[in-house]
Image (tube, rainbow, N blue to C red; front, side, top):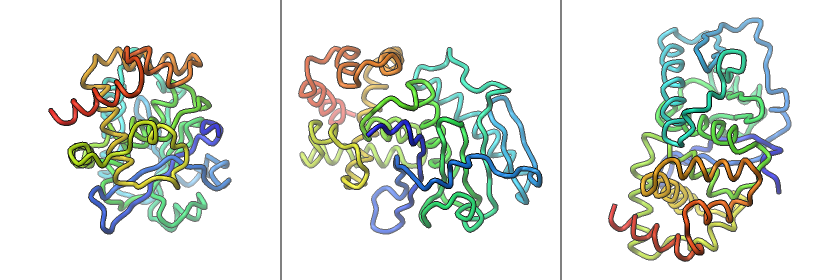
Length: 273
């Protein structure tokens, strides 16, 4: 399955009995998002270097905070991933954020499931979301922006496993990342994590145990970003962009002879973190 053709990400909140309260996952959603744009004639706009925010009746304070946060996250994400020298969305190519007043208006427009907190079209650089969500600024916003930035670089049609798409996005969350890393560390200590040969074969979100999957995926990306220079991740991403299969790209970039060696290095990193 080529995930890039759908180029849509969705946010899912698990609010009960979860170590990590916010789970976000990659999925194909309803055709409603094919409309991508909305009728903006009655909407107000807030413009910055990389974003245009469309909003209706919300307060200026919230919109100003969203604009500033989006720009700050854009800068921190491209820095952390090593993409700083590439300016993706300046001015005429700015990403668009449609901010609905509430969940009902958002769901009516997007046709998404009741649990959906945001929908993103990577190809169109469009985010649709709504006001009043827990962890919006700390988790949902950086997670969804990272999806777009990463896919903007490697290509929306590049076929990648679920752990890689979601691990990169989770690695940029603020409020959830520490708990994800602690959870992954506990899984390693208990030898209860998904072995890499199993994890790397998951391409469908219905096959995952959320807390294990997202914690482990995020920790692998943190391992690659912190253990090695960020230029390694840039080189890896370039290989993906140039059509090199992801398994070959990661082994060649990080000089692992096989994934057993990579798994062992990740285990050591987690146990000593």
